[in-house]
Length: 208
Image (cartoon, rainbow, N blue to C red):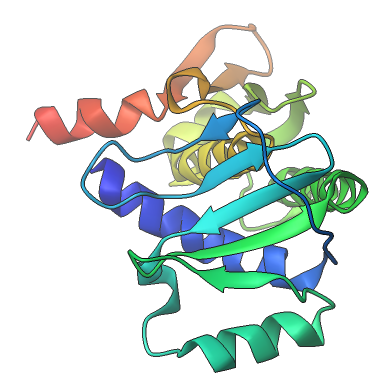
């Protein structure tokens, strides 16, 4: 399950990483490394060095593309330092300022997505959304009757993935990544539903 989750997050991350960032040279230190998957194939690794940040994506993200095509795509976005590793994974290097820019854009995108859940007519039960700085806690306020007669609970999955996505890019270690998503009754304040990711994936898998 975690391997599938890693691939899903790669899809979310692909457009974001190629849409911003230029890079610099430098040797990454061992300050921080983040990897979601503990399976044979790595997911996304983030190494924060003294002068730059390296982000490594698994080979599966680039299926059907050769290195020249990947470099061309990255170059169009201003990313010139792109290398392919022995396992087929691809590493992008960027300055810390560019990584900060990436984090800001990712946060803005996450906030926009969470607010769209609240504002969209597609999710009629959701009346409000709150979240903390690193999206480790996301709380939706919902009309209980509408919530119980809808599929709005599935919003938790999207919100959980968005929060995990942000934390991975921020360099959190795999055992530190956690996003708790709650649905709260708008009238009583009672918890209608609660899920913590990525633990919820293991729970749903083991229940089958």
